[in-house]
Structures are given as C-alpha cells and as structure tokens.
Image (tube, rainbow, N blue to C red; front, side, top):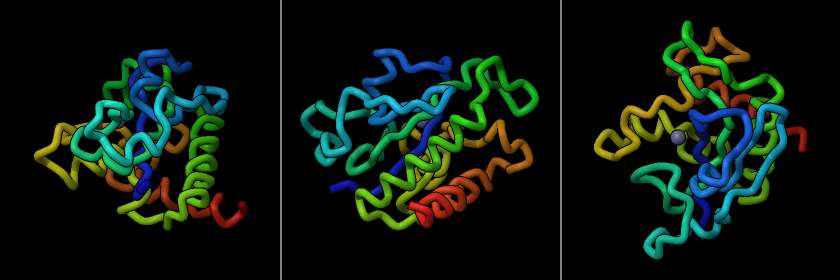
Length: 163
Ligand SMILES: [Zn+2]
C-alpha cells in the first residue's frame, strides 16, 4: 500500500524528459504543469518485479515519488545554477502533494511526507544518504537546509485544509 510521499528535485532542466519519467510517479515543470511518470504509485507497492519508479534508494516500496523539474547545475544557495525551482512550480507541487495525501488517506507527518534529503538523513546506510534534494527552496531562500522538510509540510497542510 501507499505509505508515504517523497519529494525530489530532478537536478535536470525545467521540463521532464522521457528518461526522468522512468524514475518518478509525477513530475512538475517550471510552469506548474504536472506530468505522469511511466509507473503508477501502485507499481511501487512491490519493488521486486523491476516494474516500479526507482526514485529513492532504500525507500521505494510504498513510496510515491514527486519531482520538481530543475536545479541543474545547483552547487549551493549562492551558486544555484540556471534552473532554480520557480514559485509557481513549488506551489503547484505543494498543492498536488496535498491532493495525493487526501487520495491516499495519508496524514502530513515527517514519516508520510518527506524530502529525499530527509530520507537519506534517516537512512544513512542507504544509497539515499547524502542526497541534497530538497535542502534549498529558491522562492523561499531564508528557509534553512534542515527546516525545508517541515516548511514543506506546513505548506502541504495548508493546501490540504483548503481542498
Ligand atoms: Zn531525489
């Protein structure tokens, strides 16, 4: 069953590629448009058949992968590259994640809505350790690295209340 949503950035450009669609269930472009990936969230209920979206090493089973397209060339908040996540894109992602929480009856908690970075922090022996998505939110540059996940959950909660 679907147990959580893990949020990513693609480290690519602003629009999803066919290659990227293999790895995430949903992808959001710079204008806030949402695309379906190759696999469905339900495909990740079992990850033993090779037919699933491999978005989070060590944590794919039961996990929906939602990805904001961008952040290619990101090095640090000061060197953000030419594809920073846009405000419209970020809000679209928060709203869509809230809709997924409703659909799959998930509360908004650190166990059920989290970033790839947070998953890596909690699972230091997995291949997700050291992932930096999402440690910086370009439209909200004052949000610190370790606050990004809780900031995202606050946003998702706000949208969930409005649905
Ligand atoms: Zn990721």
